[in-house]
Each structure stands twice: as structure tokens, then as C-alpha cells.
Image (cartoon, rainbow, N blue to C red; front, side):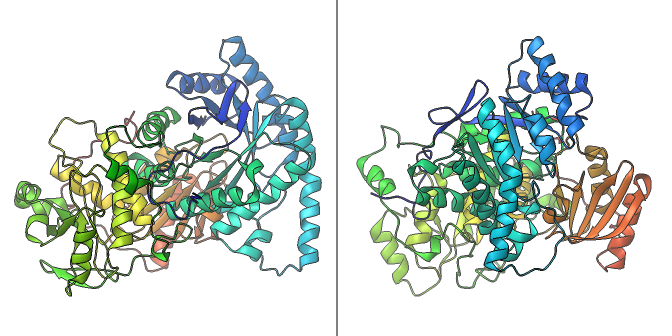
Length: 614
């Protein structure tokens, strides 16, 4: 039975790929999903680069990436690699290349893998509006072939692997003007480079489709996997997963889980990097936990009954409701429960159990925006098994619109159950999502896996367009479960209730201290509900990733900051010690500033401190 990424609604076996060797580490094939990260220091600081690499390896990082923005930086990789090998460390090193083919050619002499970005390896981004004729477009591809082929030949000769890594934020003008700022554009950008490599009989490469918006990222990877399948069996290249500019703390972990965890549940992904605006060692436990939770998709356990096996193995009903390549919110009918509106035209609501409401009822004012909106037990929610045909038929025959959910205790994965529910009940019925099909009663449960599981399950469904309300019941603590529900809705782009930040991870290109600067910007602006601010250490992905941000704060030169409105730079070379105040002035100029409340509501305790989630 043919089962494409578009039609499956159940956890899939991991996509089968060819093996790509990166030094002594295999990616794809029968290898486990690999964990990667990137050091943050200046590449010219050999001692620091060696030490940061050793620190990453010590916590379980299997492949380490180092930026090489110039030929000089690329040449110093020789000394970094030699120092690591002298210390008995054989971790593969990846050179991260942007803009400069000459740096890539130098780096390929010393490392096990080179990452190139098709959007800026042979192109510069000027946001020009151009119309390319077919002949002009073909001429541009010939120019790219001329620039890219020497690196392919060198990598083939030396046995060096490559990542063809598209970033949503740095698509070339040529791609932007033919395909738009879309997942399709991301895929086509990578395939153009892949075809050049294949023409030279080079196959030791992997793809990536990174974006700061989880919806865009998920759609791009699904589309790429489908395109590779259609290209033929020998296009089965491994995929590297990552949400770029995810941010820090709980928000960064939630956004990463939504993007990476959702794809792992689809059986997509052979290597993972969680990008946090924190010290890189804190990325590794998050990535390892995501892989442990969602990276081992396969057959149902032996104890599952025959009915479950048949149901989960079956193809879902073909339906545009479950289109996997583009976002469309399920158009449920309006419904009012306990004075709160539900349905397609309403933002998704937060539901709690009566026991949770009772525990927080005396301190609602102190919870700020994290308010319970609907109490489950008195809302008349219909809970059913989506495999129960009689129950589904009865619900669909009911003239009234009903809030419906999956019954607790079923032997189905959460995402599987809710996708089946969405496919089988009439679209007019709003759906209440749950992060788990069993309520937690353990106040001492480790919060990181709880957070990652909730973000992945709820986020995957929200990014599929499913869900009119959410219930977090995998977390026992009432305040934390409320905060988690709201933060997942925010990260999935389903409900914006606070300032939204896009913050890149630090690396050797960064022109200021990202962690300190992000904290300062948050402190100054975190009361601006609905405003999106991008914080970028350098220009590499800045303008593109800021395209859907309201304002951007970008390193332009050492000690100097450029400020953006959307993707347009408007203030240049601002001294770093003035830049946060100038950002506030810019927000005022665009009438999006409000003063912070004199007395902020009490904070709900967070179980994950940004620097201590390891």
C-alpha cells in the first residue's frame, strides 16, 4: 500500500534513507538519529573553540558545527581539528558557510562536512523585485553551477560530506521572485543545488529546511520528503531537523519541540539540532529528550489488540482537512460555552479540570494572562473513541454543534487519535485537544519531558489546523499547566497573548552577547502584547527571518546595531549601549508602544530557567 507523507495520520516508521558518513559518524540508513550543536565563540580563538567542542561532546553531542565566515576563519579550522584530535576527540566537525565559496573550499580541506546555504552561497539578497524569463533563470542556474561545482568536486575527492541547508530567512531573490517566500521556494532552492551535486556523481549530502516559524518549517520538510520520494528511490537523502532562531528558556524549547517533534512523529528526520539562545551545552539534553520521546516510530507494540492495529495501520480518509503541505484551520462552527466563544473565528481557548480551577480560583488576579477559560466537567464535552463508528455516526447525526474530544485511556498516540477524530467527525464540531490521554497525578515528574511531549502533541495538531481549545493534563501543577497551554498556543501561532521574540542562537559570527541582549530587550518590551521582535546576532539570516516580525535588532558591526521595521533597515550603526532605548523609540514611532503597568501581576513560577534546563 502506498503511504505518502500527505495521507498518513498515524505515527509512521522512520523514513528510509541512504547512509551518509560524516567522519566516523553515520547519518541515515540504519543509524540512530544524531544530535548536533554549534559552538558560539570566535573561530579564530583556537583554544576556546577546542574547549567548547569538548564541552559539547561531554554532554552527548555527536557532530559539532563551527562557523567559517571568512577564508581566514576557514583556514583556522585546521588548527582546531588538529587540537581536538591531539586530545583524543574524533567528533566530526562541520564548517558553516555563508556567502563565500572561497571559505568553503578552504574549510573542506580540514573538516568532515561543509554546510552551505543555497540562498546566499552564490547569491546576495537585495530584496529586488525582478521578473526572470526562462532564459534568464537558466543563465542564473549556470552561474550557480559554476560557483558550486568546485566545492562538490573537492568534497567528493576528499570524502567530505555536505549539508544543503535552506533557511526560510535567506532565500535568494531569484527563488523569491519565482516561488515566493514559501515552503515550495525553500524546497526548490535546495533541489537546484542537489541536482548540480548529482550531475557530478556526488551523493554524500543531507538536506535541511530551517525556519523560525514552525508551520513553515513543518510544511517545508513534509514537502521535501514528498518531492524526494517522487524523484525516485535514489533521491533518499537524509534530513537534518531544526527550528532556527527558536529563542531561549521555555519558549525556545516549546517552539523547537513543535517543529522537530512533529516531524519526528511523521517519521521524518535523521539528525537534529535544537537552536537556543543559550550556551550550546543546554541544547543537547533537549534534543536527546525529543529523540527519545518521538524518534523511534515504528510498529505498534505487540500488546496492542488487533482492532487497534488495523485502525492505526489503515489509510485515513483522503481529505483536504488533513492537507499536510499547507496550513488551513479546520472551519468549525461557532459555539458558546460558559460565556466563552469557540470555533473557527475564535482564538483557541484554554480548558482546565475542575480540580485545577479550584486550586487557582483564589489567585486568578495573580495569574495575569494565564487564565482558565472553560471548566471541562461542566462544559458538556463529548469524549469518544474516534474508531467507534457508532459513536461517530451518532455525533454527526446530532443537529447541535458539540465540543468533542478524544476519550482518555485509549491505546492510541495522541496525535494519531486527534487526526482520526478530525477526519471522521463533521467539521462543524469544535475539537478540544489534549496533550496526553492520561491526567498526571505526579507532582514530582520531570518537567522537561512533560513540556516537550505537550508542545509536540498540541503543536503538531495546531499546525495541522486542528483544535479549538486545549487542555494540558500531563502536568500536575495547575499554574504550570496553564502557563504551558498558553505558551504552546503562542509558539504555534494560534493565539498571541504576549510579546513574541525571534532570537537566534549565538555563534562565531555574532556581533554582541546574544543572551545578555535578549534579556535586556525582554525586560524592556515583554509587556507589549502581540508585538513581534527579532534579535539577530548578524546579518546572515536576519532580514528574512524578520520578514514577519514587527521590529528587528541586528548586529551590523562590532559594537554597532542596525534596527529594522519588518525586513527593512531603518536605523544604522547605533552604539550597542544605546540600541535598546532606540528600539523602544522606534516602537513608539510606529504606535505600538504602551507603558508597562505600574504593578505587574504575580509571575507564575517557571520550572525551566533559561540557562538551567539541562
